[in-house]
Length: 263
Ligand SMILES: C[S@@+](CC[C@H](N)C(=O)[O-])C[C@H]1O[C@@H](n2cnc3c(N)ncnc32)[C@H](O)[C@@H]1O
Image (tube, rainbow, N blue to C red; front, side, top):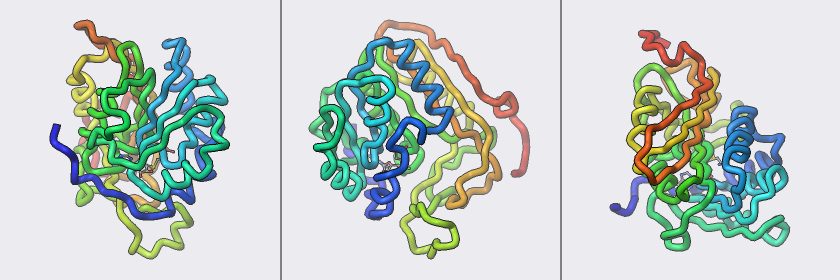
């Protein structure tokens, strides 16, 4: 695969500042994320190694250790300040961990040919330009019989895939403190049918697909033409055998109907 050079290498230290104390404990994760993690850990039964793509400061590894007792956590993030902070506090980490600053879409050397029982990517693939490449890399690093869990914003209208079509400011304080000069991240929102086709086209095909999502208002930092979108968490299980994918989707029914809403 071609190396990636399109993804934005976020420079802001606001990411590290925010994620150093947010989303570091299990209770700080959304109910939809908790629901999917619980289902996946129960079904798999022996998840030990986790790769977290877009890990920020590595809070998820601590939360998963507390909740499910994983053995090893690898966190990759494109934002240097977040990885610096993760490494600075690594001696307090409850399990062996490896942190690296890299764009996952370039297949970083340290994890080349490595596979993980669980690959997670929360608010990452839809937070950068090469969404499809990020998702493909995650799937490639998922072990046979292992799971890939990712969060994805869905719509029944057209996909917004570029930063010109939809963006958000990289800003975690009050909206009133926004200057408009902050870095921008793409705010990718994917048409639900395209998302389902994307999963159908995974290679190898997953044998199990769980989805959980609900309607909500886009972030107050986002500039997009839709007033509501579905925030979903999707989990797929890899199976090297030729198989059919069975989907279990807890999604609002009206997402799966092609409305001509002009939100
Ligand atoms: C919205 S934050 C989410 C952090 C964390 N996953 C969570 O849900 O709490 C998105 C993170 O993904 C990282 N990121 C974006 N594109 C990336 C890429 N191509 N490779 C690695 N990290 C990436 C960003 O730097 C940022 O830290």
